[in-house]
Image 1: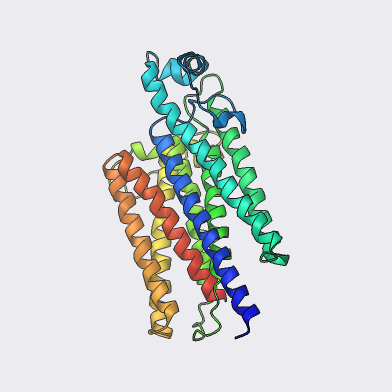
Image 2: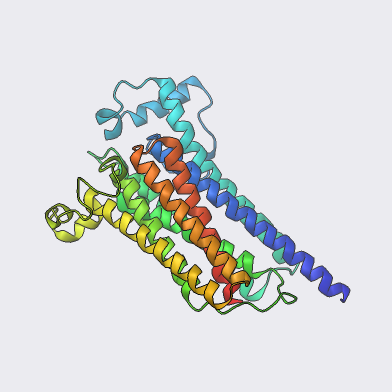
Length: 346
């Protein structure tokens, strides 16, 4: 193999490792964001200062100033009235850490990108794709603030569910894009041809992204704290229409009605598991010993495990550890589904 080709292959390997590190940081970001939500910390910082906000309060006086800003919002008055300064520091640390991790991801993205670009390793379509992902990351930061601002409105004690779902969904799309690009950079020219999978892997990715968005609505509306039984909801496998569509106008039920929000999340989970099992069965019938069949089987196992974890989380009324595990494992399922789809499309 010519030295130039060897050098290029090594450079692309370095790029692939860098992108996977970014993907891991995005998963960590989702985990910290989930902990921030579950600890009720998301509204503790009431201003959006992308640059100066990187420095936390360093003196007791500075902490008192930040605490006073928090005491002006409805969450303090209606939920946390009487909170001590030390308790405020705890929730502030979660939100500050979440924002700081976002800044770190920005640096880990743009500094190596500039270096690889300057060396000619990244160019053309790959460069444009990565710039697009970077732009999506910048948009995600703005969406994060819009989400927080919705919870700072008078009378609000938490962020708007639809905006939380959008924030989580964009993070998931960024993760999917990163994994798709990284998986596509691996040289598979010497590997055996892949078995034909059709559109099933891509459909599975779409279903998982949709389910994550529904999970964001469940989290935002706190629907997981109600109807903590399975497989029945208040004694019914399918709740009555009067419960599913009690809110007027009817379209708002999909966001604001905890019965419909939780039921939709359950229903799509069944669809995903059934589809993944069907895909695995189909692939094992067509090409039992192929890598595609092995990946499809693994995806069926992952989706089933995620559903079981979701049921456990619901039955335990969403303890912190279970809620975080369910959210982070969803990112792992999504990443594996994207790898399956990308390799199958190669």
